[in-house]
Amino acid sequence: MALFERSEARDWFRETMRGVANVVVPSFTQNLSGLNEAAIRHDIRVEIERGFVGTLLVSETATTAEEYIQFVEWAADEAAGRLVLIFHASFNTLEENIEVGRRAQAVGAEATLLSYPPTFYPTSEHDIFDYTKAFCDGVDMAVILFPVPLWGFERLHPASLSVFLMEKLVRAVPNIAAIKAEGGHPSIAGFTETWNRLADQVVVTMPLESQGVPLATLVPMQLIATSNTEYFGDAVPRMMSLIFDGKVSEAMELFWQIDPARRADRGIGAIGGANMVHRMAWKYQAWLNGFSGGPLRQPTARLVWSQMGNLRQGLVASDLPVTSDPDSDFFVGRFPT
Image (tube, rainbow, N blue to C red; front, side, top):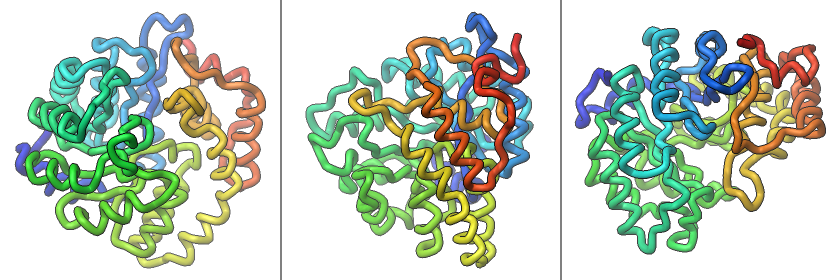
């Protein structure tokens, strides 16, 4: 259960979420019939060892609601309060997202990244407001708004969620605690406008470390969340720690060191034409430096040898940790069962 009232969500989030939050993709048994507890617990331990302050528990991998709650429960038990767990509100309907969100909170999730179902087709910003407020009113967790091109809301405003809409939501909904300001990508205009208008009220984060780290040297941005920063090992948490300590030059030295890996990562962003995140690639990126790996259920984007080679070589060229295990081992995982 969250250790705060809805009216306290913003203060709790600002005090607690300082650093980097990434993602954990759930792990399955080899025959994909269920979840893999040993692998999930391993990944949570690695999160903590690498210095992440929180993690999104990904729901977009064909897990059932029951399986997802088990995923949260094992993660919370393993984390034992050392990691903020973020519920991924990416189920099929508003009602299902509220139901699973409440259950996830009951077993350990404290924050939510709000997604919108593929079948949600708003005809006005009022429709987005109503969906968002209904979800937030239905849960007691701290909610992260997420303006991003994935939703297709640009037909209503180029920034996905206009700053006017977000201001209205922040006024009306006390448990909106943060904004993952990726609207208008690849431009940073969505971030800068959100920062200028709302950073005094909620935590504003740029999830992409390629932009977030440089921006954190200019404005007091306290959090990078949530993206596949586990690909870079502990580099992104280290960069943010250096910035917090006033060691900007050292942070930027590390920033440039990992540029080959960053360039490799750009090749597996949102899949062209499908508007979805390549979760298989993200799981492989994590496996390259110590996470569990293992198979994912259909439907999933296909990961091919050329993509894997580019991602592996990016880490080598960046002088970052990378496994010597063959790529075939990724599809088995480190804890096959």
